[in-house]
Amino acid sequence: MIRKVLFFIVLVLGLGRPLSAQQSDSIEVIFFDVGQGDAVLVRSFEGRAALIDAGGNGKIFDWLREYHVDSLDLVIATHPHRDHIGGMPHVVGPTPVALYMDNGHHFASEQWRLLEDILDTVGTRRAVATAETLPLGSVQIRILPPPPGSDGNPNNESVGALVQFGAFTALLTGDSEREELGYFVSLGIPNVTLLKAAHHGALNGVNPGWMQATRPKIVVISVGENNSYHHPDPKALRYYRVYAQALYRTDLNGTVRVIGRRDGTWRVETAPIELGSGLRSSR
Image (cartoon, rainbow, N blue to C red; front, side):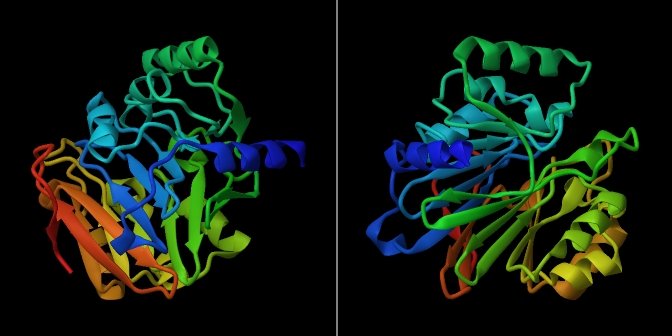
């Protein structure tokens, strides 16, 4: 209880930049083009901001500055693979972070050790993901912790986040594979407006049960161009196209910015790959 009160105080006193008047009473969910990896920014119309993953390199620092993010209320590392935490030192070092959250599992990698050292050095407040809902201004972020125990696959230990703003909902599940997605369904997952394709559009990150449980209107795949994993899988793409009204990919569309409204309506803007070249509307 004390932790939640402290977190709320930090949010109230945060330094985030509000959206423009034309976007008031809206939420932004931005899928940055960081190549093969995940980096998703959630920002309320009051300017409160959460970052879920940070890609595998320093691109995230430039993207945050491009979108005028100079502080973060919440940072979540879904799991410790390089394409999700490799960019974290470029975030938690130079950018004030009120709360950093991960799955609590240690990982033997150079990137993980570097991140741990920086977190200790700057003294960022840390938490292990538990089933709770955190406020981000007018937005609520429901944390979906990994299932108890471990199957030895870090993908299935990803921290999930269900973002809620009125009737607009977004579901982000890191690199979860079918086993963990089934666990999330057992926790009670609603139909969502926006779904980040799990595991960069791999076939092991989707099945009919998952799509029937979530029934997204928009699917975004965060994936690198011509990646060695051959993501996204053609069969996975068929699943997403059957259920969703719109499908976007960072390798084809660049950065994808979804603007959701409290009544559940939405629009999408995509950005060219080059930083600083502006936005183009796609809906």
